[in-house]
Every structure is written in C-alpha cells, then in structure tokens.
Image (cartoon, rainbow, N blue to C red; front, side, top):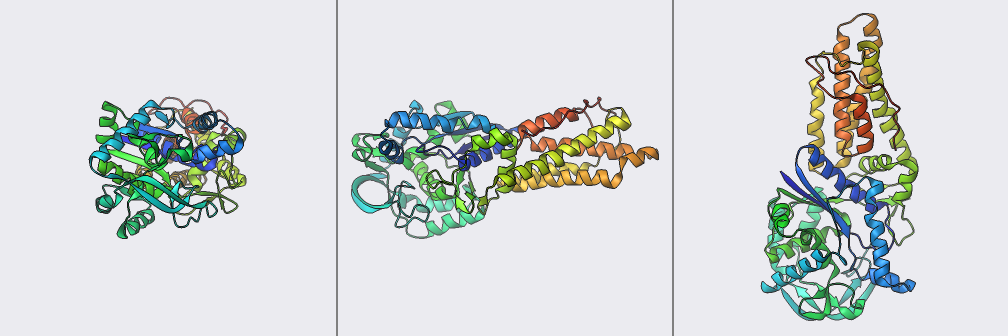
Length: 478
C-alpha cells in the first residue's frame, strides 16, 4: 500500500501561527499512523511564495520582496522541528526548480486541450483569499473591484466530471458536510475562472505564463500544482499515478479550490485525481479565527518551548474535531497534557510496571490477557480513515481509563495477599493494555510513547513469562 499525504502550502506574508501547526500535526499523525501499519508513505509540505500578498506586505514595510519571502518561508519550514513533524519532502514555490518546470508543463498540457483562453474581465477581488468573490465573510475589508485582461480556464467543461468523481467516491471528502457543500456548488452554474494576473500588478513576482511574459500564473493554479510538480520521473509514477491513496490535508476555507478547481486542472492535464480531502475546521482564540493579520495569532514555537512538543500535539488531536471550530486556551492545553498524558497514561504505565516488579519480579506473567484490548487498533483505524483525530484519541483514552479502573476494581495487591491465581491474568492484561495504548499513541505523541514503550519493554504478553521489564523511570511529558 502506497500513500501520498500533503498539506496545503501557506502564504508567507507574515509569521506562522497555531493554525499552521494544526495542519502540519494532522498530516504528520496520518503519515506516522500509516507507517505504523506497515504502509509506504510520502509526506509533503512547503510554502506558497508567489502570492500577491507576499509582495504587498514587504512593499508596505519597505523591504526587498525576495529577502522578505525567503526569511518568512524559512520560519514556516522550521516549524517542523519544534512540532516533531517529519516530512519526506518540502517545496518552496519561488525557489524549487522542480516547481516552475512542473507548472509550465501543466499549463502547456491544459492549453493543448484547448482549455485556456484570454479575455478581459471585471469583478470583485478579495486580496485576503487571492480570489474573485462578490463577498467574503473572512476578509470583508479586502474586496476591491478589479478590471484586467487574463487567461481563463474552462472550468465549466469539467464541472460534471468533478461532480461524478465526488458522488461515486473516487474523490472522498471528509467530513460529509464539506462534501455536501461542494456538491451544492457543482449543482449550480459553474463559470470559467481566471488563471493569470497581469505581471505589472506584482512587479513580475511569480511564474510567467508560458509564451506570455506579461502575465503571471494565478497563485492558486501555481500553488495547487505543487502536489505533482515535486514528483518528477519515476516518483510521479509511483506516488501520484500509481499510489493507492493521494490525500490532501486542508482547511475548510480552501475546500472549493481543492475539490473543484484542482480536480478540473488535473482532468484537463490528463492526470489522476486525488483520492481524498481531509478538511479540518479553524482554530479560534476567544471565539475569533486565528489569523496572521487579525492580531489573534498564537506562536506554536513559543508554546512548545513552554509546554513541550507532545503537549501541543496532544491538544491539537484531542480538541479539534472534524466539524466545529476549536477554541484555544493555554489552560486547556496544560489540563489535557497533565490529566491524560501524565496522570492518565503515564500513571497507568507506572502502576502497571510497579505491580509487575513487586509481585512477579519484573517479568510479565503467562496469564491469558484480555484480547478484547486488540479492538483498539480497529477503532483507531476507522477514526483515522475518516481523518477524525479526536475520535481516534477518544478510543485510546477509553482504553487508558479502563486500565486505571481495572487496577482499582481488581486490586492486585489484595489478589497477591490472597495468592489468587487471577493475579497473573490481571497483570498480563494490564501490560497488554498499556502496550497497545502506547503503540497507538505513537503517531500522536511520539516522544512520550517512546519513553513509555521503553518502560514497558518488549516481548510476548501471553504463553510464557516475558523478559524482565525495565526499572521505572520518571514520566515527564515534554
């Protein structure tokens, strides 16, 4: 099984914020989970350097555009370290030679199909979204009337094929509410879209239209292409054309670009469609959407420095469901990490290892463990198939709670005093439950899981006594 997972690539007109961390962590969890299941995974992220707002921001500050973009792009790419995110590849659309060549190739392929034409246009343009809208709820003050001559793409030609791909499941959109929104749009009149801008508007910043240097390729046409432009030669055959799954992890505000415009672009170019869109909601602070320009941004690097990588990753997985926006507070982050990672999972592992050392000299007994614990793997798989990280961690947390209830209900110290033969089964079950829960935690909190797995040792839980468990070490969530 081969799986290709990508994030959206953010504009770099300002510093990264917690919303960008959410998407990176979600994609990283999915990639780690699939690798845990033995699948072959490629994980891509990067930055969108060619947006017009990446030009207006440095101009307003009196800074050179290239220097500004380079500095901010590096800040975005550097997020992967503090967040514990491990992509296989990264792209910067202004610097990566693969990208420009790939965009030019896609443009030519669509032109050869007769799907590109040039005409004059006047409309209301949202500089926040970098898109033509009559209105924009997210950027109400960023709408301007723009009149210009651009290249257009025959989106109307591909509305029905895109609709068919979504309806028959070739392009799966999760959650279903986002799928329904896209289908409602496609059920209406779908107009052709502008896919270039006059070069004069951006001072020539961006990728010139092949054969028409007075026009710059529209930022969305440019940016969406990164999912295939970074795959050259046999890599494209393996990871795009031939992969079993092609998954884009994106925010809800850009669903239409990925569910309509991008599939149409691929159909025109004669390339395979993505197989799934994992659409996440927004994060808010005090009820307001986190954004670079609104003053509600939260620095994820600062949060990691104070509370640790796994504490932040766990909050993002536990608090952000697939439907409603999630409101962030530092108090919630701390409470989740302390209650669930330290006093929940960490405490269960400590209690279990301590009991095995006390009553069985550190060796896992040969009592038959409760194999019902193994159902956790299926519950996690089912949740992450829907890209629902919260449901997956709910399942893990339920096992942790049951483990701690088992200790209180069975009271192994009393079984030991009474020489009750059930003690071996209780201890074996506790070890098995801990090992299973910790293993399923690896994609979410890799550092914490690695430390707890070391405490639990390795080897069989049933059949015969396993090797002695390592002596206890303090559990510190960082």
